[in-house]
Amino acid sequence: MESSEGDRVLRSLIGHGGDPALVEAAVRAARERSEPVAALPEEETRRHARALVRGVLAALETGGPDEEVLAAAGRLGSDRARQGVPVAAFLDGFQAGRAHLVRALVAEGRRRGVPENLLLDGVTRIDEITTALVHRMVHAHRVAELEMARTAREGRVQTLRRLLHGEAVPVPAPPGPSGAYHCVVSDVSDPAAAARLETALTAAGPGLCGLVDGRLAALVARLPDPRPGGPLAGGPLLVAAPPVPPRDLAQVYELGRRALRAGTAAGLGGMRHLADLALLTATGGEPVLGRLLAGGLLAGLDPGDPFHREVAETALAYLDHGGRIGPAAAALHVHGNTVKHRVRRLQELTGHRLPDPADGAAVARAANWWWALRHWLAATRE
Image (cartoon, rainbow, N blue to C red; front, side, top):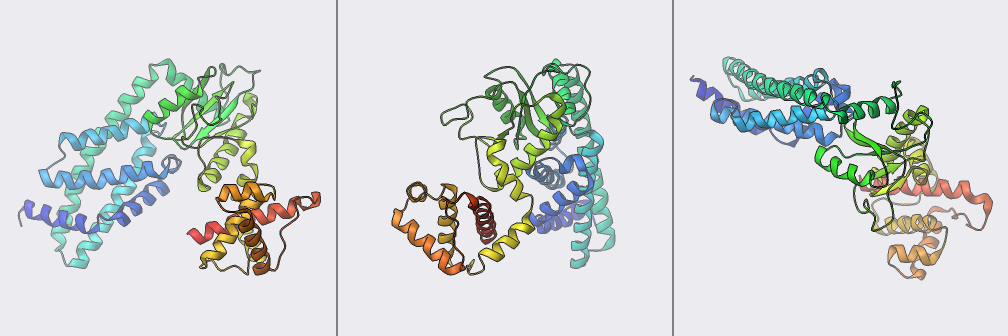
């Protein structure tokens, strides 16, 4: 057959297998192969995998990668350099995604009875296309690295990365060796969005900002106003730790990342203090214990019953507001009597009484209830 016919067969196979499941499998392959890629937000890897599939399809349509496809590959390479991902780790992830794509196409082709010679031609064509993409990505990655290396900013970002990874730095200034600084972490990976947040984070004073492990992080002497109407209100979740000296930054950074994962799972946004997320962070790290608590305290609730979910949400709001009916009702936009009724029904359904907020000894039991309710509600949404 003509090579154009082979390309048509290959396009058909990719089109058949180019559903979200193929992209997700390529994402998993890339993240398993490369630790630095796995440290990036998953959507970044997904963007990369989609570009690989679309780039191959576009190249098959035109006979080879055109300038638009190559430019997209270059942007990916440049972004990875600015996110601090080494070129070797970057290529490991790319090649893992490519290998998965080839395996999926061969398996689909054999299932359809496509002749082996056409499948071999298809693999060769994919290699030709991905080689051109790799060359453009590597070139853009190296150009971006050289540009950053020539700037004072990149020196500061490297200092930030080394401090947060617990590495020694020659002259930690800023921050100074005797100063104490807030460590702020986020899930923001887009360089343009990160630049906008940097401006807000350093509005109250100087600091170090940059992408660390693919996400925006910062060290600042003073935090911007976190209240409603402040520069960071309504934006993505930022977790700000109390001020600590440079020797403690690596530990606080890891703790902040744990709090960020827990806060993101809870749907939080804006700037939050690490201390305010302490319970959420601790409970988020022990899902099995949360399941056991939910099983012990909430066995009488049916996840498929909407009313049972309502009483659980009401009880959680009741605990979140210190057992006060009025604030809990306001948060839920219901009447106070509704809160009382639902709390009473929860106790009847579970056979357990919620702790009395006036009882100082009930703090641990209240925390157990709070944990069990959060875990149970999260499980009903999966």
